[in-house]
Image (cartoon, rainbow, N blue to C red; front, top):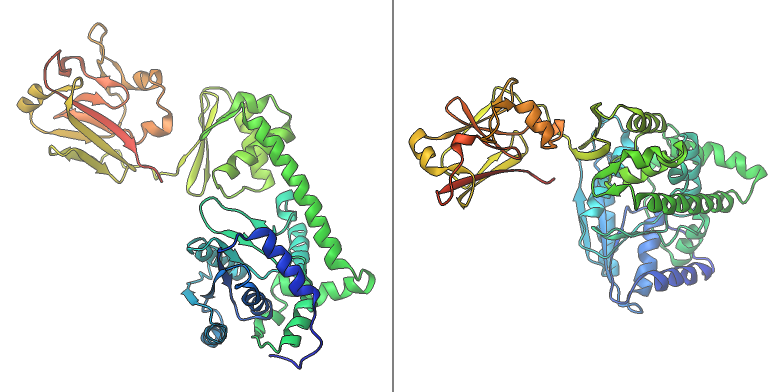
Length: 451
């Protein structure tokens, strides 16, 4: 856990200080992710050495996974270390699902990054180093990752919604961290699981890289350099997609005609960019290619749907649209309006709004004679006469003419008086239920809740 003192390793603090000067404005709030291992212990120690020079508001965060019998001891160690350095310390306990399908490592990582995103800091400092970067590149290559995956970990990852992730040690080899820790007499925790070669990263670290090092001593720097090249290539593809997006993406809508005008590779690049804009977990290459093919080749009337976790991608009238994924509602459900200004229909993911001061809509005089309103869903065969100079027409036709997409029709609340359909939001009000000029009216509108 510590070591005897050796001569100080000067290049490390100099390199670190130059990174911090380039990235952090004076007075920044920096939260160091502290596991208690060598890497994070050195990272926090280096920050402590600079906090007065750069007026850093420093804190440390320990994520308690509860996966090891020593987890409580690690927490105690981190707390004591921070007390010795006069660094404010926070901890978060997380539950890791062992049957999520992600694997323990991936599930733990996901939980950590969720905790990071919730911190009130300007920067979250992570202790990944050059060896970690090389391991990530090779792991991603073995998984068949694309350019973004092979770019491995960025040194700086801004986030408009959360703290910026920084990795100041990404250009430093682990043995340099060890030299510095020994020179400063630091102590740290050795996690027994780090020697378990059943984990892919440990297998590379203990079995593969020692063999590579026999022929390629500079493997750390060369793999890290490859990651930088791939990151530049991925950035160029993003720039190309951004140019293509200018005339093909508006909000959550992607123009499938514009998508089909591009080459297949360029179209898939644009589709990937579109999904990333909306933080969709990226589908694998085969799934993405299938999505692209269907979006550009299907008949204009075809109803195409891809479920992507919490979002669903639909195609309608030559546009692809991302919407919150909704369970199929029970068509037999019904609700009753009791005069409230808003009626939330959580089963449908939206809210009905009733405005009794409107100038047009349902006749309030007629409503007072007929009683309360009932809200139902489509069952098929409904008809409505929103135009007094035209006969009753099939609701299916009216919905199509109104441009209401099929997936919205499934959750569209229909307004009934007893068994008579009197109003359909976005379509209109039955002719003989419409308020006349000057007559008190009730406007009914439907809003899907934003997620």
